[in-house]
Image 1: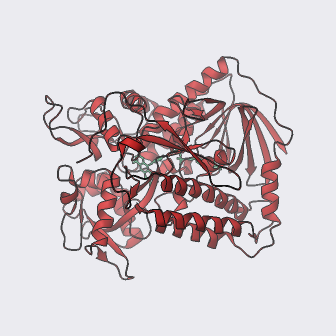
Image 2: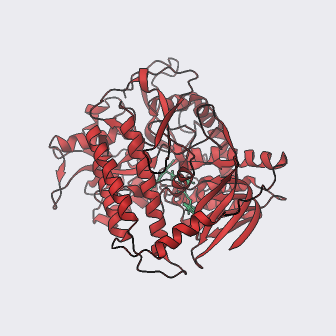
Image 3: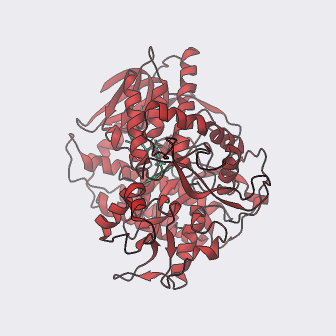
Length: 587
Ligand SMILES: Cc1cc2nc3c(=O)[nH]c(=O)nc-3n(C[C@H](O)[C@H](O)[C@H](O)COP(=O)(O)OP(=O)(O)OC[C@H]3O[C@@H](n4cnc5c(N)ncnc54)[C@H](O)[C@@H]3O)c2cc1C
């Protein structure tokens, strides 16, 4: 065993982890652990943009942005946190610009902005109650915004004395006598376990898209951070809210950014009808994602989908009317994806698309300073922080608006970093480690390496992914969710009978995949039971047996806690409302 002593451990080197790392300055030491090379984190795949009411293109205000986010969240987002984020967004973008991020520009040199789903302004700014129409609020670097952001933050983190541990896979968090004291990680290269003893730990491990069959997420998106804390009795918040992005490439799920519709793209059914006009008469194709995903599934269910060679269905994303220059300069990446993966030329043909699992609205509950909280009273777990997609602040509530995630990373990643610095300066110290600190991880790994059953990792994972897509999809029913709970029990038993073909130590990627599979199972459990419990439809959670939103009974956050050998425990936390009482959500 190797033991490292640092002031701060950051798990995850995507936008959230790196933005926090920028704050941790000498004399304090910081280790950033990542299971992939930092620049391969999923943030680098983000395409469309990061939003702030800069008003560079037209009049805008952070209050309009906040209202859109609250309405987009189907009124489940915590309004104080949303106001804070939208107000801070303007500063955060200028800060990125000063750090060196290469934004796309307007001819006058200012940062260019474009339209995105759910971002609106009053048609008559003098009358806040007038009809709301799309506004240009998303700042971007062509359709490679995340790439530009990740590189910028990486360079800025390198300026501090941050030490990177790449290809270190975190297996456990050390929580002992009421405080968080470090993490345990597997060095994938050597197969050795390392203990990182720290005064403060930040989880920034991103999302869990790989719980599903069709997803826009990278292979590393296996929900590790959520599973690790869930196994240690820390609750997860609002896990039933899984975002399906409406436009994944048919069957593959590779993302075609909403920026395509922001620049004027139109969704069409098999009759060529621009069907979003029927579902969202004012904003049409720029409606929020939950609504557009349901519209696509409804079109297909009602027989208006386009049939593929293999008998599956999709709808068309029509960009053929856009000037070639727009495709070339503003959407080069997705134009290439359509050509490369499906052999479709978007200048001449519609791109075949279907909803794809994209984003986790739920996650590890935190306050606005990234501190992990354990219950409805916001009891803080000392020394433990979370930020980014793994966390639930909650600024996205039941449905996130496009471009609000990259914003969440830079606003709350920074705040978590600052809160950690304050904690260190207030005299936080290393606290004693428990004697058996490695036991939990070592036992799991040895059990897997010596497993002699007949089950294999890949088929089990496939079955989990297929079942989640079928039973916990865009639409859900009690019957389907119950079915999924029994599939999960079965899969867990079969997991006990895994046998690895590679029993070596060095670069044992099969072992890592087996550990990830257990994480996927735990995350799937939290999603399924939370979804079964919420008997209403809100945002991305559409229950066909309870089709209406029910503010009387369900205007509250779900908290779910694991119980060994039993069904998880569910309890609640109130939604924080400042200015906006829930109203019916129409677009
Ligand atoms: C294709 C795509 C396009 C997107 N486009 C946009 C967009 O235009 N605008 C927008 O706002 N949002 C967009 N999003 C969403 C947004 O990019 C993500 O929500 C966000 O980047 C997540 O950042 P993060 O820092 O939380 O985590 P990530 O960037 O996902 O990084 C997670 C990190 O955790 C590490 N990690 C995970 N598990 C472990 C473990 N067990 N041990 C050690 N390290 C671990 C990983 O190695 C990685 O470094 C997009 C998402 C996708 C998938």
